[in-house]
Length: 252
Image 1: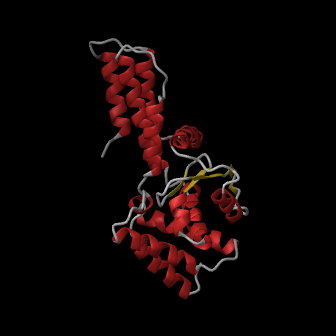
Image 2: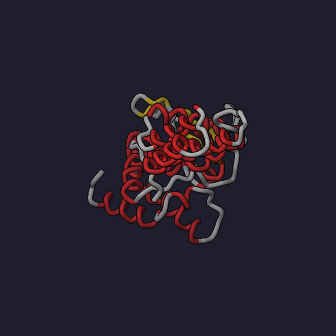
């Protein structure tokens, strides 16, 4: 396991006590590594904003008048905020079966997922993704990304070059890390409950949570192209069984 604080301390010590001189950027980068262990919500939102901006640049975003954008707006009209965080929805015109949400309120849904799911199933998946942000499940991914960027900052400064602290390539890598963040079984279950909440609030049958997860399981076992959603959210069939049992017992 990568120990952020230990490695940052060693880095700062080496820069200050070693044979080479440490400049302000070197020490700043070492301090960034220390901070990565306790990244704040403000820092998380800032990194998410940069990552989302780069992700939007790399993908074809549906226009506001596009039928996929209209469908997404209709489905999410009740869901504009999570606490004090305003949500920002867009559609990627890509055939990947995928969706993600980030700490700055970014919610992106891929055309491939929208083609595969009916409205209720899609709403459950969107609610699930927003649940990971609501319950701060992505914090570990942000911490590690913060540490990675700090380490790159050191390497760039020691190369004698003066560059922007976050290059386009760094932003793209950050986006990939955050979109592909892995979650524990308990985190998946908690996010599923947020998906169920979306269905209840929209007055839709909770059975569509089960059918959505079964579709993902079938696609994954069949070897079809599922984008990142299946890989980063494991065991959809088991989760479907758990939700079905919960619905039968009348629990929410």
